[in-house]
Length: 199
Image 1 (spheres, helix red, strand yellow):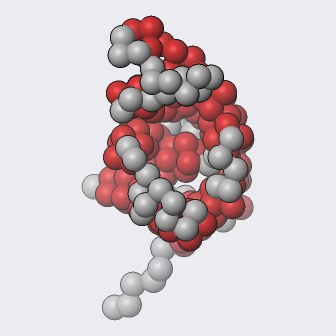
Image 2 (cartoon, rainbow, N blue to C red):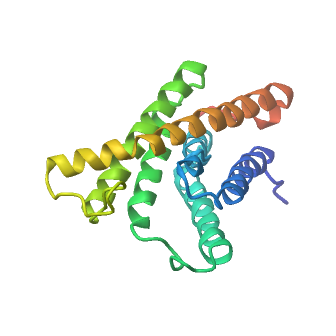
């Protein structure tokens, strides 16, 4: 018996693919504005809506990796190599945000999406900037290495605030589009809703 393609899966992948395309289109700007990105929303969305754990983690991570390849190899012409330094930290943080989507967004509401977006942005900020400091980051004003103590770590965290603000704004805006758009589609097309099988 021929199995039909799941329309829910196709729509979810289309939403995630669109976010990856927007990320690629925005990647030419390396200023803090470039951190107005859909990746946080994409991770929360995948974690929340894919019922299978491997799809929830694997498909958003695969999409992030493919968009990274396009950015690093095609748009930046390999300037930073195939993958940037510390990519494994960022992918670990991204997987954590997927987990937030799975655990904090079991029920979709404005309040829950807002809370998950805040948690995602704050976690990304603290963990990503800690990884920058651990890797020997520099003072953005003097271009000298940050001190290897609490003061150096705190300075790294503080100078990351503009990036965090834009990451948070991007996560909020794109989460509104993703979650609002998919919830609206589910009301219009009930086939997109999860079918609960009785055991």
